Length: 139
Image (cartoon, rainbow, N blue to C red):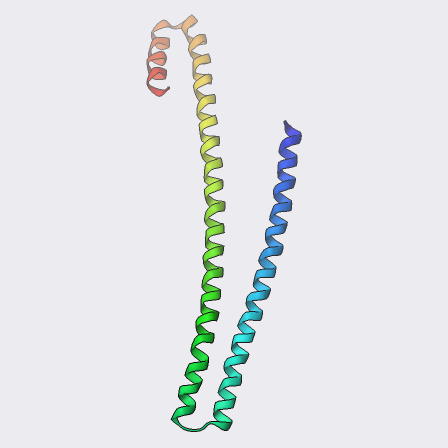
């Protein structure tokens, strides 16, 4: 049994390592996407500023910059929501583990109380009866 716990811990460490690698890769691509979007907007601004003067140039710049900004914003929005979902799943898993531990602790406490009841019954019948009544409300 102890060996299986160690194996599970090792598997979780390996899985955590994979998640870290995926996270690093995701951030790398996020920065690349941000750089490409920023470079495209700067390039469009330079083309408009140098070659296309007047109100038509500003309109053209808006037409170029808006979809780029929307795509970069959507990309980062998706990344943040995916990260939040992963965090929520991890927290839910941890909470389920805590619930199971609490239930196990409760079972052990009731078992200990029943053992105490058996010991107490031999020495003090009235106190043992009170404990038995209390145990019947707890179970």
